[in-house]
Amino acid sequence: MREIVTLQVGQLANFVGTHFWNTQEEYFSYGTDQAASVTELDYDILYRTGFSPTVGPEIKIGAFDATQWCGFGSLQKYNQLFTAEANDTVDWDQGINKVVSEQYPKNAYQQQLDRMDVDPNTQPVELDDQSVKTWSDFNRIYYHPYSMNQVTTHNMDDSISPYNSYSVGRQSYSDFERETESFEDNFRHFVEECDNLQGFQLLASVDDAFSGFTEGLLHDVRDEFAKTPVLCYGLQSSLLPTQERAKQRILLNRTLSMTRILDLCSSYIPLYTPSSSHISRSGLADYIHPKCNSVYHTSAILSSAIETISLSFRLKNNFTSIGSLCDKMNGQGTTRLSGVSLSLPLPFLKNGFQQTAERLKNNIAPTIELTKRTPSKQSFDDDVFAEDIVVRGLPRGSVHASNQGLYEYTRALYHKFPQADPQFIDKVPYPLPSSYPRIFSYHCNSEGFITSENETEPVNSIPVLSRMYTGTELQPEIDYLAKQVEVVPFAQMSDYSEGAYGLAQADYLELKEEIMRLSDSYSNDSEIMLE
Image 1: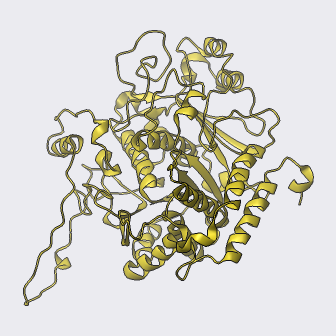
Image 2 (image 1 turned 90 degrees about the horizontal axis):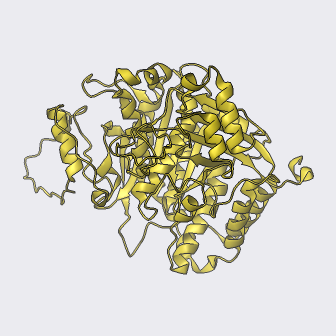
Image 3 (image 1 turned 45 degrees about the vertical axis):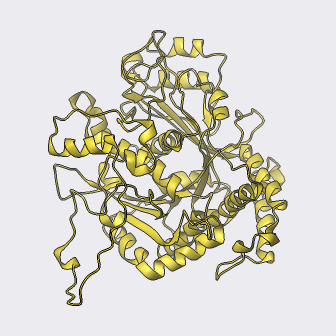
């Protein structure tokens, strides 16, 4: 069935992943007027069959988060799909002292979802942005108990031994696995159910110790599945701390991830949460107004990109596998690092492609650059090694009888696709569940199309364009990290050198050499590319 097993590691990854899975749940709730999407997608790729037809299928996922009061929030290990087994209890005649920790309260949105489980006719309530403290506050789905993996060996809130360095994370994975055998039990549970495993989709928070934790996890994955494709998204915040040492830690974690995690993946894609600068310079600021200081908002945008890229993996017909996409990106043999840009929404006037292209002719390639620290458009001087473009939700049938109208529109708007023809998936727009933040302007109608009127109806779905690429436009991002790691006072950062997985000075020097070699792979110097 070409299954994909998804892994989420860290707080930001679980924010992004929650939006991702809420979107999948929306496909199942489509009515007859949206039944076309049901015929287009194969849900068995991401989901396993659930035991309760009233609740729906379960996802194939492993989610990791560290101990903190709001880590998993109000999310319970057991739920409507799974209850604790009776034989979990142990006979003991010496008395019991019961210790109950403070329970994280459910917000109004989660309380109403509980009521809707009992009475489907209950009206939903709007999710208040201010009530979202962690990812479970806007979660809409049920997880298998094996999906929930709480890293209890370290505490995110610990001010004495903060969970913020790569080496600490690498050690914590070893400690966690030794105590829980989560990889042997929980991970294998999902993999062994797959008939024809397509690959792994990994969302990893790489700004803190979960970067090193991810490396440890991937070493175990590679020991068992040496040739299975792994598509990894390295998730990073655009909001850096003002304290210089804290900033240096984050940049060092990112650099270690870009070299060490990259070596264990088929493709590694760094993604920044979009900043206000990303939005203002995207050409889409008239249509999208996120709060860029809210991880709830910015993670939704990252999820929209990941979900659109993965759409090709889940098609019933004319699908692209994870392995094929990763091979395409790494056609040079040394280019496993890729980037992503996103058009959310993909601007379209319902009057037609021609009028849209004419209106936007001075706004070439309106996209949010998610892999670039400072947003900049693709230059004609950039050498694109490979790219993959997905266009979804444009009304092909009502405007043009073939792909040609779509192609002419997107080509006019995005000026060129040197390495790929877009894949058009017109029957599956990006659905917006009630948990998705209301970030689209009144210039978007309920279908996400651009209008000149002030729309009052909420946006229910949106057309989207995603571009995954590799080429010389990634080199400035690599060079920025190389420059920053040069001035990191590594000798003063003792927590990076402590423990069984600590880094020696020689490892630090090797890191600087590796990041420079990576930069060379993305040079437009043809002689370097042929090496």
